[in-house]
Length: 270
Image (cartoon, rainbow, N blue to C red; front, side, top):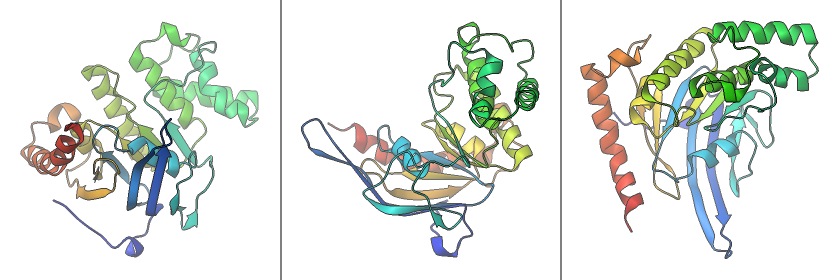
């Protein structure tokens, strides 16, 4: 179940080559986070990234989105080096990025407002997305009045409102209960299948990674490099509630966990 490919031979949306990243502690001690990271993401592909806690998954996303600069290596978007933030990429983090003083509707409108879209256009677009996310009736609610799952849906459609062609998701469902998480997994799958976007999804949950992705990429413990990738050849559409009982899913989970567990065990050793 492990595959290695010639990156140059792939038609890629993203190409990451020889990426290295080091931070420095308060005592000026170097902390090597990423080491010789190489991989690709195809157009319209859904790729999950899994690795031990603290291995550098979020750092990788931050570099790929232009928020951080690596010490060496390059990130290419459509064959051109990416070294700054681009509106082509939407970023959904684990924590809510909603403004507490704005209603759900006003939060969804925010990105369009910053881009100076006409008021009627951004209002119509926001209301359409709110309806699609099954949030009608909560347009005037403030974030504190919404459940965790509802806030996360607002957070997602706030990013969709600016129509990015690529979406980065950094453990977006980690703080949610299992039922809300499965509902949002279905929502993300439906969204991806209907809009032809490219998604890079970071998660600690191996079941979630397999359920959502076309490929699962395994990172080693820090300093992280790409250990392997696994093709998820399960048929779509996928229903989270049913898939976990599928023998093929169970076999995939076992193979990928066998690949990952050594990294996790080494990470927690004193």
